Image 1 (cartoon, rainbow, N blue to C red):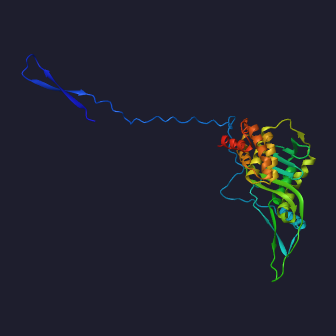
Image 2 (cartoon, rainbow, N blue to C red; image 1 turned 45 degrees about the horizontal axis):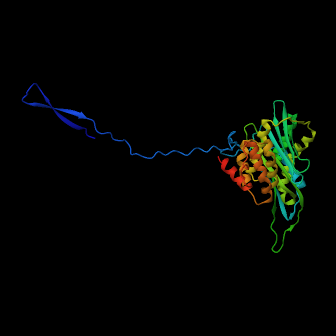
Image 3 (cartoon, rainbow, N blue to C red; image 1 turned 90 degrees about the vertical axis):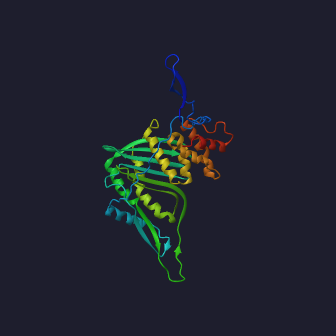
Length: 355
């Protein structure tokens, strides 16, 4: 903006015959550098009641690689596994050919540093999670054993075993767990039909095995369901892979732990998150949720919130209030406070525990 100039007469001497014009600077009027706008006051930040203790951390459950590397499989052990499967497999569709494939052994050639074994009975109401972890001169064994129907209780106990026994068990298990037997139906003449049969049982059970090396590469496989010929391709390898780990539990000298240690919580949290990520059988979900308040940490609360949203099916309706109990126990905030019903409590949990 151009400054305005004001002019004044300056007289030189008394009665001067002429005047000298001298410019005088006059500052411009004050001009605002911006238009007047209403001041916007941001709304107060809502402090979540769910995360007053702490916020969940990100837990990586499995090491991911850009490419798949497969270690060599022991030929003698492979032959043993194949012979056992051919002996035990019931060919329930004829004519057909039993083919036994093997998956990728993604752990290194060094002995496994950790093994997690799981088993449970659907009708029996049990679930066990057992961790075998290599130490310098031995293997530490930690067991979470829970009963949910009869004599309800959860017990955490510890034991040790010789490293050589552990290595022998792993050497057999890492081959058996990779076996994938399946029947290939053979072609028939026109008009002929395959003869089929099979067996089924009401025995529903769970078997799981995870082998991990020092670089966190892992092999994991599990089966949950009913005994029967249709599921042989899954059941037989899992039984072969886990039978020695299961048998060892009855021979080890376990002592009861006096309290829930941090490493036990870490074990449970990882198994809980892995199970829920892989859509477990309904009774596995119920057992895990039932253990969450006692053995979990705040890291599983987001998954418990999702479980609390599900309803309409018998198992989901049973798990829902237990998940709300666990949220309250782990966060110190009860989503049912001031809620008129379970639906409103679940909505409170979803709102306050959003990440």
